[in-house]
Image (cartoon, rainbow over all chains, first blue to last red; front, side, top):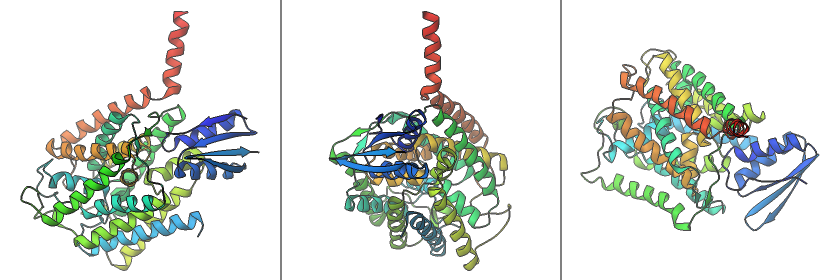
Length: 68
Length: 361
C-alpha cells in the first residue's frame, strides 16, 4: 500500500498530501502523521471522503490506514 | 460534545468575551486584535514611538500562556521548528503591514463587522481573495519545508518571555511606555484581560480555531469545521453588541477604522495570502507559539518587528485614512509575497527545472 510521510509538515500540508496521494491511489493509502492536529485533520478529511480508517500509534507518530 | 458543537461553542464564547472586554475598557470593536495588540506591545517596549498605541496587552500574554498550559496538560506541547525561519519572519512583517493598513487582524475584522462597521466587508472580500491566491499556490505545491524536533528548552522560552511581559506590565518600570491617550490608553483591568486571554487561548488551542483556516479548508477540501468557528464568532459578537447597545451600523466614523475601501480590501488580501503561506492567522500563530512551535514564534517576532517598522516608517493607517508610505509598502509586500509564493511552489519551480533539463539534453 502507498505510504506517505507528513511528519514535520505544517497545516494544511498533511491533508493536502493525503488528498494528492488518494488521487493517485483511490483504493487507499497509509499516512504517517506526527501530531494530534494533523491526525484530526487527516481523519476528518478521510471520513468526509468516504474512507474507513484505522490508526496505529508507534511512539510519537501515528499511522493512519485509509481504505475504500 | 461533538467536534462541530465545540468549535461553535468556542467561537460563541470568543464573540461574547470580545464585547465584554470593550465594556471593561478596551477600544471599541477591539476586544481582541492580535495585530493591534502586538503593535501596542511593540510600542510599550520602545520598538516604535507612536505614543497613542503603547501598552503591554495582557490578552496576548493570556493567549500564549493559556495555549501553553492546556497543550502541556494534554501532552501536545512539543518543541519544534526550523521550517523556513527567515521567510516566516518576513511574512510576519508582511502580514502586520497588511493588517495595519486595514486596521485589524482577521479576528478584529470579524469583530468590526459584528459591531456594525461595514468597512470590514471590503476587508473580508480582500481576505477571501487573498486566501484564494494562497490556495492557488498550495495547489501548485507551495510549502515551507518540514520542521524538526528542538530541545525542550527552546519551546519553553516564549511562554517564559510572556511571563516576563506580565512582570513588566505590573511593575511598570520607567523604560516601558504606556499610552496616556488614544487606543493604547483604552484597556480593561489587567486581571480581566489576562483571564479573557487565558480562556480564549485554551479554547483556541483545543479547537485549533483559525480565521484563515476556515475559508482555506472550505476551498481546498470542502471542510467547513474551522469556518463554523469563524461564523460563530461573528454571530455571537453581533448579538452581544446588540444587547450592549454597541451596534452601530455604517461606514463613517467607525472606531479605529477608515473608509478607503480599496485599501481595506488590499490590506486584507495581503493578510489572507500571507496567513495561508504561514499556515494560520495571527491568532493561530500566537496559540502555536504557546505549544512550542518555534516557526510560529518566529512569525510572531516578525509581526512584532513589523509593527515597529509600520509605525516608524509611517505605514499605518489612521481614521484619517491610508498613508502614501503605506501604499508603497503594500506594493512591496505584494512583490515579496508573490516571489516567495512562486519560488516555494514545487509544481511551478519543477516545471521550470524540467524545461531547463530538456533544453540541456
